Length: 348
Image (tube, rainbow, N blue to C red; front, side, top):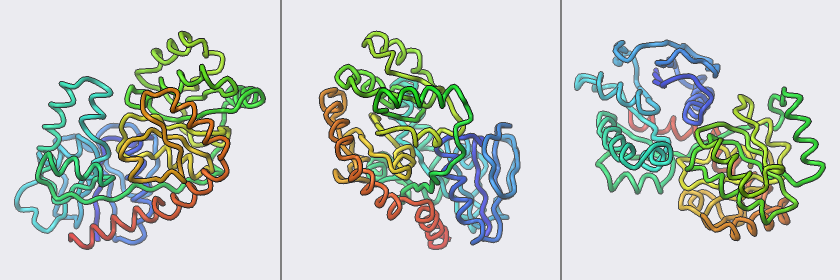
């Protein structure tokens, strides 16, 4: 089997990391993998043939059994270049998020509405569209007629990841840990991630400090909120880190406070590092995890969040073990790759 992956760029972001993980797991099971990408940015190393192209460069689709695109521009590229003559090639796209919710959180309702319509139109040229959860599949099945399949993402994260290289970060973490229990999160700082809720909870959690690894458009607003809530001395923003997973071992508890998610890779990484997790009570998290594995809280209810953090910390060993076992059983990288291989084989 010969497979082409089309990516917007080779950056350290969730959808691209997922594509890399699929490639790493299946490369020895297929005859050929070629990766095509548009932007001249290479933060990730992928062990296969890599080709930088422009949008108007035409890939020879007939060379491949499967063409698998990820994100908007690659999906648009397929819509623009695929012809009816490509009968033998299977065209697959993985839809990594709820388009409307994601764009609304980053831009506006109008932008989200327009781009969701466009994106779904582009996907009509694909033979199969993979959604990450059944919640997402049900949502899109009501929007448009597509051949939708659900495949859960997976992660294999070793706890001995490359360690923190910043002496200043290490000093801050050790000093903070000597005085407080550390609530941690690593993510792109957008409104959709709901980090403001965690900051507000610190008012009632005097024994906790918050460490955020990540950058984004909400950074200044979150810092201002920490000042407003008088918790800035217990709220630390470390910025973007290429090796963000390496920071997890210094946390005592992990909070995923999102209003919506495509698939919670950060939660998987935290769980694989044996961290207890608190997460928002939204349908996607309910589909993936039970109350044995994570502690749920009601969105925008700071009292609920504060109590969930305390309960999760008090029962951290049970929560972390159940979560770790579930992730290894259901959401490993190997399981994800196996499911993609079955999809390729059954549809080809």
